[in-house]
Image (cartoon, rainbow, N blue to C red; front, side, top):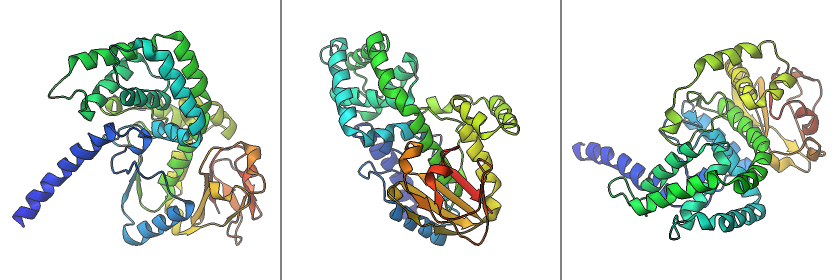
Length: 357
């Protein structure tokens, strides 16, 4: 027993330093997957696999913690949600990265930083935009030291680190590059937020006990520590919470930049947890049925999109609700008196749905 206890004390830190703090800073294929407890070789799961996972958690580990951000996450939950969008546009993303690499080549010093580091930088820029040069430099310095390929905390390579700092400062002072970056990234902001709302609602309603890390009640565009351990403005969040009481859903959406839609989802979802019953997938039909996750928890139903789509693109996609009762969308106040429900109508005023009866 003494050997087992000491072995267990060793394996955790060895795993963390070997995988999360080294390998995950080198394997930069899609860095939103490089998260604590994650597997960067797994590009998501099907809706059926998600339902099976929820059934297993409900059966075997009903009190497990569901966390999307912690003090130790490598990227805030909303940074990851936006970077995830790149997996749906490989052609455009490849073309953009190559254009940025050619444009920024003159800013390198002796060919440094290397391509892998440069690719991490571009993904970070997409996920954390808008970000200032100082935050970006601090993050990239930590990332390359954790990677231990060109430099490290214990054996610092001044030539490489200086070249990296010069490169970051150069691109962040290059008006042409910043305008190009803005033109690519800003169209991703809204769909990234929709994905975040879906992620937040799933976390708060799926089997398990949800955890909301300090500050992530609104958009969390933090990077790894110490970035994600900066002081949180709780007074601001209290004022935002108070303002929700007198706002319409349209007014909430108009203040999207302040994070009010996410705070609204958190508030409303937590208010109905006492109504939860057994987990049950809901049938979805139509041309975009594979893009929807829908389930009930007794007198509560949740419907979210797996990917951001325009309202009109849902076509004939519908979800079947248990017909024994009338349902009300807690996020919009809309009454749903019939089933099946059209997704185009359901997501018309708010991009996710939380129904109660």
